[in-house]
Length: 210
Image (cartoon, rainbow, N blue to C red; front, side, top):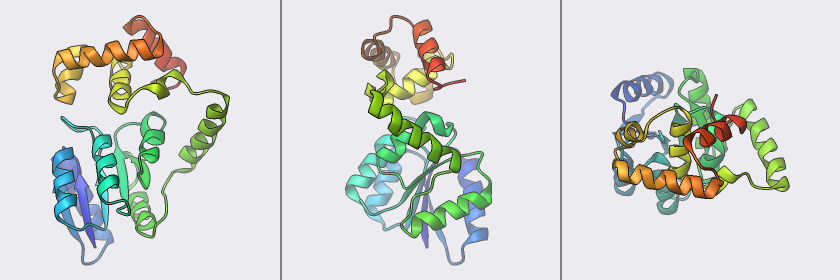
């Protein structure tokens, strides 16, 4: 079996490799540290499953996910992220991922998830399954304003709502301050809000951040 791990943290990659080596016999594990490296690896080699982080410097993991599913529609992609399920899971699954897990997940559950997506299934936790059902009900009632945002705009919204400055967000995403300021302007326009304080109140009110 061949598994590609795409994550910009060496400690995380090493830990995942150890978990998989203990759980699966005759396994080959590849590594990618950026979205571009992950895409290149998927295009050059056949993998059985990709374990993908969505928060990486430069191009986001969500962008990589969409490209992977375009190039290799049948390749299972399991997203493993630091972000809580209620922040990104819906977007990730709609983009074609076979499952979404947080990095706090127990190693045994990660192995179960990999087995499930390898068998052609979808992996979601019980709590996430309930959230997805609620989201369907809310969509029937009307789409929330934050659902109008692009994936990158949504990511910037969460960072602003978590108290990060424009400069800090630029550093974190390896983008320019000007680019982040442009994203902020678009977010305000699409949500009909006026300031960072409004964005924070909106995010808290909709359960996007604590």
